[in-house]
Length: 271
Image (cartoon, rainbow, N blue to C red; front, side, top):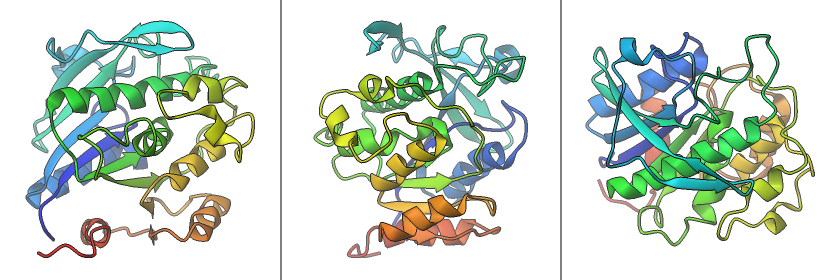
């Protein structure tokens, strides 16, 4: 396929967090696509269980310093960077003391889901997109992996639709196993509002967002959907099929299938 600029927005990437299907793909997919001569950028949250010294993270001063307003509160955006030497992949980290800091991924030390997981996803999405703008890098494809990236497709097609960095970008969402049980609270739709991303656009969704509803939102605003693991909920796969958008089933050997899927989003493009 013609070489692309691919932005990977990952919830988890090994070796910075423990191995699981999501974190392993978070490392391997960018690595494989880079080896195939695609130009990549990779982002993830700076979770509190990441050892910055061991991972050799350092702050990128020129990208940090912006404040994002969520729930009428200013939240400073901090950008850090590190490299996975074995994969030769550079990773940008979205950090903030309120949302990440010393906090874990989905649940606290007692195993209780964080009440503000929805707000954390909003901050992460906006933090990534604002940072990509600062990088002056224009992705052809944005590939979202994990619920933390679930609001990105909505923002790309609404709040950022007129931005030169994203005007022609295709968005792909990978579906994974359900890992959250609690909802995001009744104010999530209001917190999500930003520019043209209006709460009024969310009338077809439940008033209270949860894992499934967030994935439905991601599907609705994506140009393609991938079943990343065998255990994706049937209702989400059926929902994606009913939307009549490109859907790639599960592939254990994913590299060729994913690259072909990316190519299918540009049917009129010559090699």
